Length: 424
Image (tube, rainbow, N blue to C red; front, side, top):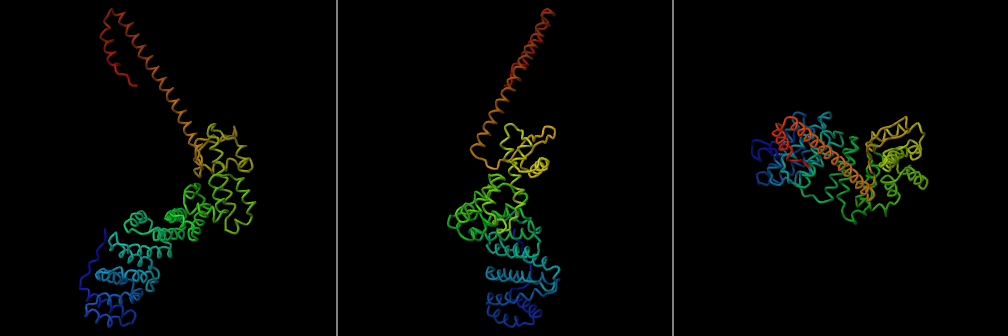
C-alpha cells in the first residue's frame, strides 16, 4: 500500500515557501524565478526550477532535512507529472549530505523510502527510486537494511513490466551491493538471476554476457560453500563460453563432473591460467578434492563401504589425512557416513550425485525395486504371522469348547465376528 503525505497549503503557497527556504540555504534567487511562473499557472516549469535547485537541501540542518524533502516530494506528486522530476530528485538525495555526515545514510534512505512508498506499486518510477536506494546502500555497506525488502523484488519487477535489460540492471545492482557487504552467496544468487534474463543465443554471445558469465563462474569456483554447478551449466550464456572461452568452459566441466586428476591435467596444460585470472589454486584443489570424494562415495553407494585406501588414492593425500577430508566432506553436506578407524572404512549413509543422468536414474530404480521386494517380504511375514495367530486362537477356543462341553460356542462365535474383517 502506498503511503500518503498530508501537508496543508496550496501548491502555489508551498512552492513559494520551499523556494524561499532554498534561497536561504544557498543564497540563490529561486523564489524570484518561481513566483511569476506560479502566477501564470505554469506549475511544471516552476517546479522544475525548484527541483533543479533542491540540491541545496543537502545542506539543511539535520532536524529540517527530512521535512524539507517531504515537502518537495509532496509538490512533485501534486504536479501531476511526477516522472519528470523524480530522476533529478533521487539524484540530489543521493548526493553527499553535508549538514550531517554521520547520519547522512539514514536521512537519504528515509527520503527515498518515502518517495518509493508514495508511488503506486505498478508505477515504473519505483524502479529508478530503487536503483537510487541501492546506490546509497552499496556506498555505505548497509545491506542488512535492504534484505527484508528483497523478498518482494520479483513481484515488483512483474508489476513494473520491465524488459530483460532493465531487470538485469537491477539484479546486478543488488549483486554489487551484496558483494560490497561480503554477502557472497546472495551476491552469487542475484548474479545468476541477472544471467537468466539472457534468453536468446544472440544476447548470450555478447561481450557483456561473456563477462557476466565468467564473473559468475569465478564466484562459484572460489566460494567455499558452493558445490553444485548445474545452476551454471543450464544457462545459455554459460553454454556460449564453449565457443568464446573454451578454457573457462573446460574448467567448469571439471568441477561439474570430473575429479582431481582432471584438474591436475588442466593445470599442466594451462600453467598460467590461474595466476592470470586471479584464481587461488589451493582453493580450487580443496574444492575438487571434496567433490572427488563425493563422486567415489556415490560410486560405492551399492556396497556402502569406502576403504581408506581408495580415498587416499583418489584424493592424492597421506593416509593420516583421510579422516580429516571425510569430516570436511560431511560438513560441506556432500556426504553422510560413519568412519571406522578399526576397519579403515567410511560407511556411506548418503551422498550427493554431482551428475544425475541415465545411470543414476537406473540406480534409483534398482534401489526402489529392492525396497519394494523387501517391503513385500515383510508384508508376507506379517500376514503369515497373523494367520498363525488366528489359527492358534481358534485351536485354543476349540479345545476350551471341548473341555467345557459346548459352553465355549458363544466365545468362539464372538471371536470369529471380531476377526471377520481382515486388513490387507
